[in-house]
Image (cartoon, rainbow over all chains, first blue to last red; front, side, top):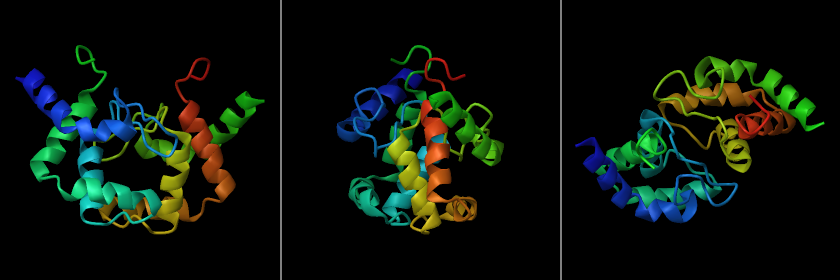
Length: 90
Length: 90
């Protein structure tokens, strides 16, 4: 059950992996690592991007990403990253 | 030499530890873990808070923290967190 939730989040996070890395360790210095990040923080950050409460340089790029995410998408993606690297989840 | 830089950043990050935790793993779900986070991302996030480019709920709290940080402070704190947990740094 939580494994399915993790898998679902992983599918939805495919698009994030380009910048945030295959395993949640980002590919470039300006992009944050997301591996094992706090669930609540991830959801609020995504919401801030969608609401355009983050507006500096790279934030614009993230606004475009967050724009087409539903609340459920955000929760699933946050669930995936917050559990990435924890015990059984590779 | 890098050990001194790490120590200097650690001193400056004392105030951050209340929310972001003694070892960079935050104490509460809405606050991000900073342990081993990307240096460039940490510096840009702090600059965004200082420039008020991040404005949602908790961002206000971070704006107050970032307000009295110089660029050098931000770099030292980012150096500390980005190296926290790496090889010799506890």
